Length: 111
Image (cartoon, rainbow, N blue to C red; front, side, top):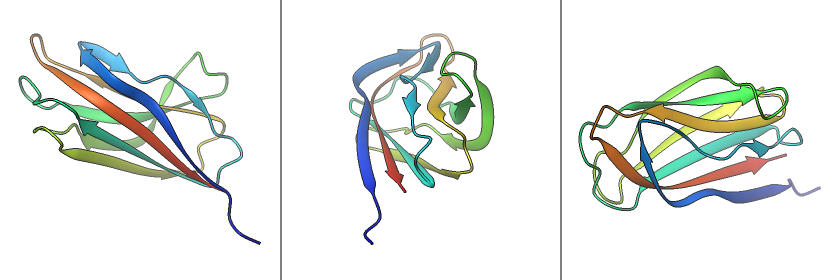
């Protein structure tokens, strides 16, 4: 039996500033997940840490534990690999005042 895989574009050409997060994605069928965050334009200001959040309902969120530094240059890519995440997933971050990054966020899932 071949494993089931999917790649979902979660955020495309979104300008993240302040407290930012991608749209939630329902992925309860998957066994493992990898988030990729790419800077489409040169980021402005310091690159903050980002983290993966999980949710039982897609509305209330808690940190899953995986953290990574946001990309610090154009076309830079950051990623987080996770497993045992329940049903809903998203990536969140918090930029300093005046800092921003235009992102492409993809989620790669495998059953």
